[in-house]
Length: 246
Image (cartoon, rainbow, N blue to C red; front, top):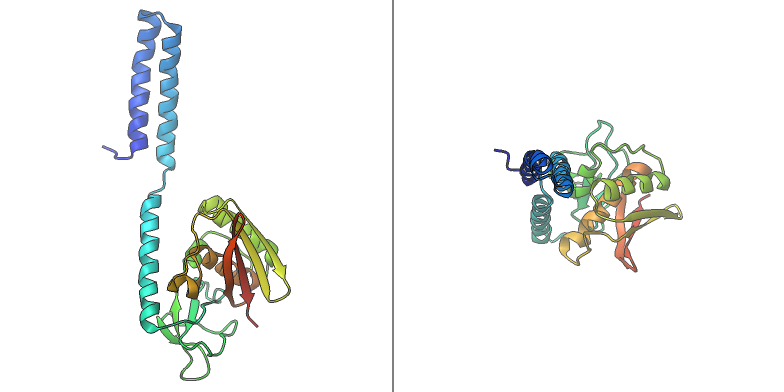
């Protein structure tokens, strides 16, 4: 028996309406009751279609897995005492997912565009032996699966991709607007985000999940390393400043 509640409800409504329709029409001779039975059949078919459109993983399960990942990453960052802002790198030439670098030293060198990235958790990214970092996959990297972002597309492509991901696919916001402030700053305003910013270790380092998605899309569209410069509330949402690194 299928445990999808929408399919079960649709089956019950459809069978009940189909069985009662001829009884109400031929035996009871009631047009209103017949119309009610036919409406029940229609509601059952709609419910069955909703069951087919239901995602395999419920929103509650997705939220639980996201929260677990954030708490585990936050514990790792806090245990290592890392306070450096994460650097979101554009995808590598081999077509792999975008990676995020968290330097172990706040005063360490910035990673260069196009440099090869290791698949290890702790990796060396600079010319010196002490230029070490954590190499992680941020939440935004997964969101780019199936979304076409052309490297070097600019702020207009950032806005289109973010509206597709945050508004259309994930339903995490009502709208997204993007505008560039010079060559080094991209300002993103997210209206009515479902995930709020919290002043915790993970968010101070990598940004909120929404900011992580914004930074990942920006790094790919600009084909440049970026990081979350600032993030704060505005009247109807949050304002995220993405710093484009030289």
